[in-house]
Image 1 (tube, rainbow, N blue to C red):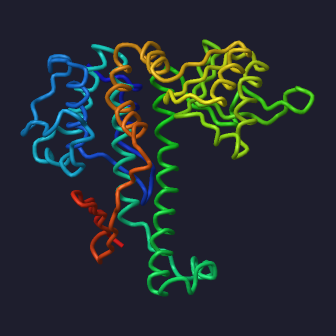
Image 2 (image 1 turned 120 degrees about the horizontal axis):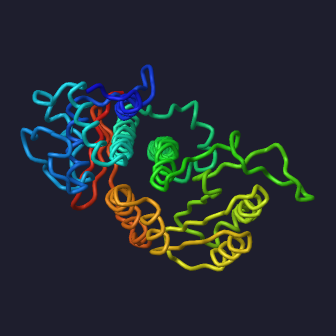
Length: 346
């Protein structure tokens, strides 16, 4: 039976990210392993996808524990793309949401692969870039020490900026898709900014998750703290539910971290006053699971919640001492009992 055009298009989207020299194209081995992971996550027997067995078992049940190079381990035994497509289509026959589940897992994997490439290729900053900054600290310590410190902090700043960019293409779109919606840019947004008199302008407002058929607009937040006000962003946050209401949309606030604050209480009140809802902490996760349904709630619990929950519990008062080393082949980060090596190609 011929596979539908929509499934073939989705499978192609699962495989590719970007174009040209920046393109990430998953190998048959990676696609094969990610299919196995998806089926295993859902507790399905192979009868739902007709997948052949891996030549070696998954080293860990959790995706995040599997080293990225291991995803190439099936290159000599993985089925061809056309055969993998048929297994993908077979799984979708069992449940339509499998396509989205696999797509999101592939998106996560591609972004992680791309970021490893960024870490491997991000250039050291030049003295032309950072030299003038030495005026602020020159003479306080040894010059070689100072210039090494300036080089490290600029390189770390650059790779952190790239991490923020890649996460922006990943985190909110995945959450939105699990809820049955989509992220909408300001340019295409149905929510318009209001002028001083409360009338809509032509300027749109970005929406983290827009569910058109339900007239709902979600705002995602990891945490709401007093710092938001101090940085001048809180008025912007308070205006979102007001502008949603003006656009005849119900604003919904999801705050994943339950840490209380006066700003969080105020933000919740405004969302509710504007005809919306606010879910915080465990209530937010429960709401997402309910909206996501049987299949996509598994994705949230396996791939989104664990890293966020772990980071939320991190005590920033006990930051580990880290030693940084730069060689011709790699960047090495070390603590007293852990080593993280980034192989370099530049």
